[in-house]
Image 1 (cartoon, one colour):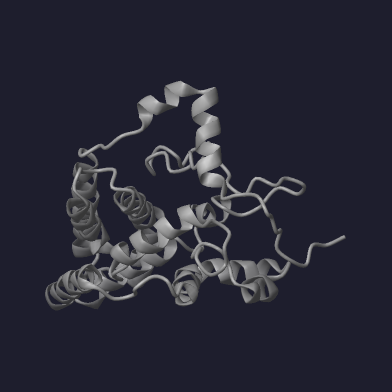
Image 2 (cartoon, helix red, strand yellow):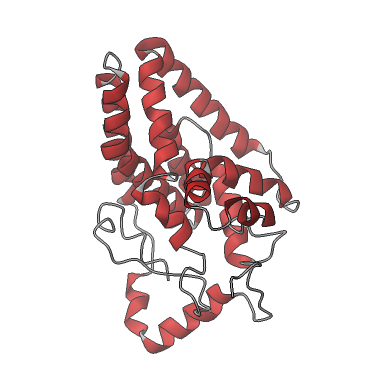
Length: 258
């Protein structure tokens, strides 16, 4: 019989319970937990790569921009998204402010200011996973109804996933949408976007925007958004999955989501 609704559970939030279980059974994992300031060097390197590619593509044909964005830029942007995830957990530096600033730097090639807002919504996701009013990673009912079992609708849903994810944040009433850090994030990207547009033109800024859309959308990497916290295996009731495929190394082991 086809499933027509979400799976509901009365068990406690699974992140903390699973962490305790993993550490109990494999205490050596604790040695992998900690801050790594060298991640900021990765941020600087990938940001430099994306800006260099944007410059080199400013006079190229649209098909070349699209090809490089899909085959190279999306991977770079996704790696930066992983670093933004790390700073949301304050895993680069000791001070929260320095982590937030690092996330804003990592956000520069994405064109859209998302780093600071993601930090707020993602921490709520970890504390209240599966609670509709507090978990921004949980889809709306209308998302499931619109996509259904249609391959085409699922592809369109994934293509517009950045827009869908932004739409989900409106139901999280406990989070203050605007503050000093959010404004700072917006202003930094407004300045960098304007400079790129002024000196390199629309092709460069278009390349960066397409990379952002592909990195979390209709792309092999976009599957991460579904694989991470969706029940993908029939009869299995663990909503958090793990990935060991070939893309894991170039995206900083984000597949080890458990």
